[in-house]
Image (cartoon, rainbow, N blue to C red):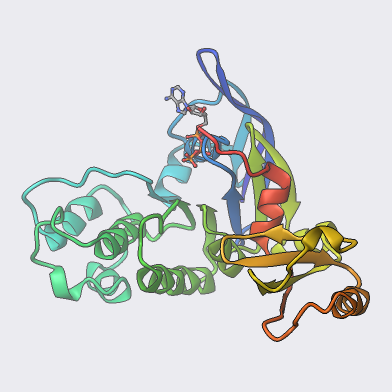
Length: 290
Ligand SMILES: Nc1ncnc2c1ncn2[C@@H]1O[C@H](COP(=O)(O)OP(=O)(O)OP(=O)(O)O)[C@@H](O)[C@H]1O
């Protein structure tokens, strides 16, 4: 559906995207993950046809991005200035007039649950309401391919989950989705495939479960913060997290036996599988990014 090869973006001396190859099959959801400044938005903006690649090529259904792509793509930007002093309903009508093919506004209102604030000035919405309106705007031309740039950033957990349900409904219609996000659970829930970016390049790619299976064969034992009195006496590394201890192990029986030998109380023990967040931190490091 959408394919990019050797894609690069330079802003003066900043080499933001350094040769990316991506192919998004129809009906799939591809997630772009990466630390701040990794180049996700720069990549999305080129794929959306909004910024000219410094090098490389993008094809939509085998053709360069053109009028067909513009009519069949829907974009939800990370930051959008909505028109002032007009209501949510008028905002939808205004955007609807921009396209030859449109979806019924009434249907979008119901789908994105906009009923309660239809007559409100679109600048006076809560974070969740605003994101639902922006999604409705992105869907107004009944797009075949939908771009979502960090759509749930800043939303509370309820609003985020509500938004995931909306995206799941859109996926169920067979739409192709490209999503950038900082939320690993969001990527795990929504994405068929994930590309992890860092320093302008894709450093890992696959389905969420493939990526986890490829990188990890261990699990994590969690113990209360005060469970181990002398961690230096144990023959494995114990990582102190903010309110508990973690031990990574591929041999649960052996590690538990060693903990029992050391008379560590196991009352508060939990075992968790590896997560995308573990993988993300392992691949991109824990240092703060700009
Ligand atoms: N218009 C611009 N002019 C100059 N530099 C830019 C511009 N846009 C982005 N950059 C730089 O390019 C790099 C990649 O930025 P980009 O916004 O694509 O990353 P990102 O992965 O989307 O980050 P975030 O998660 O913070 O949104 C950064 O170093 C950023 O400062």
